[in-house]
Length: 565
Image (cartoon, rainbow, N blue to C red; front, top):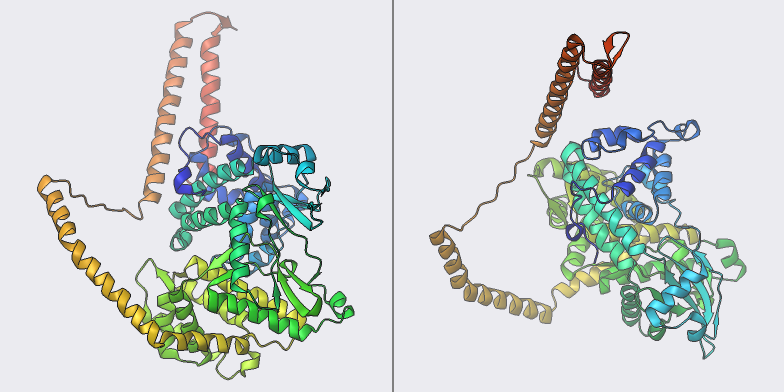
């Protein structure tokens, strides 16, 4: 699995300097040189950075910053496109205008050649596509940043689609993740307003997500688990996956013929019951979340097909979310307290579901939550929109520098997305009303006798393990104290700006000393009259004065550019 911890932060050797500079060129091209300067990247990448053109093109400069950032991510390729899609779930971290642009990120890129496809098949299966399939369409059906899709037919006549991963995509992503990890660490160092959001943790979570997407065996396991949890349910159809024709870089699955949930006109022409489909789709997503704790994390209209008899079919199982039983119960409590306008309990519930890296002003949080509830207090249930409530909640907790756990962001995104799809099919859809039976079941399951007995047994077992391990743990601590090996770690915060200023000051002093030495040395050479000469003036001395002038001018520009004399 890819990880910025595994890859490590960028070292002073800058082994990916070319890619880093390519990323910076794109950001400069789209007018984000101010961010690069705020992050002091020029201190880390001095070599060649001055050569980069920082002036954005006129036609690009006229666009808004969110549009320019979306275009930059698209130009930078698969890692950055996927990062934008993941960030589109973080309305606490990204402002609404950026969220809207990130939702438009196009994961469509030029296809790679059939020769490359053949090489991948030979490397993975030791056979060419024509040897494995009765038919294999050399022209791809669609191409995306991670891979592309081809149509095919198996020997038994089954029609399939074959996803083939792009050549060297894992290496490309690994390099980009290492660079993103470095940029995230600079954000925490220099952008005080982002420190509470922990950008490095976001990048590390993103690394885990994208590593699952580029391993098709993970997607196969996701499809099979998803199929098992809906076994016997006639309202949903899960595509069949063919393990014998699949591996880490190749995925073969059933070719589904249906209509996208977004194609309302075609659905109407085919006689589809739009209200029924909207209700079924919403119920299926809530069953995934509240009952199974394993859900499709990206149920946008392109990933939902409607089959005959109003049957729902989900596609693309690369991004799935998971919720523990405790997470489901805590989130259920939160929603029920919001719907029930229980101001006293909602604060406790929010704190259970979030991570707090600083001391929380509980009174201020409770007051803001009460104000938020006032907006919904007198609205009838049918007018309550889950997406709007969750959006307000995310913005509120972000202001208090507390953050929901990553899997909860995915779940909120899934609920908001499916509500949008459902309202497109049926404007009268009431998601919260449909969710009530699922939430009540979660509450009732908590007080079942066998559940209480089970939890009591687990708690007792934990205490037994604790008392059994306690003597050994105490012996280890005392042994370390006796041998002087006990270590205490301290983390200094708030010194990064001072360190950056000291580095800048020391660099300028060193530069000034070299400059002064050059001037003095050149003066001595001219006074001594050392040949060769030009117009009776030593040439070496003139060259020295010329270099000193260039260096002095460069130093002055650097001081002026940073706004400090």
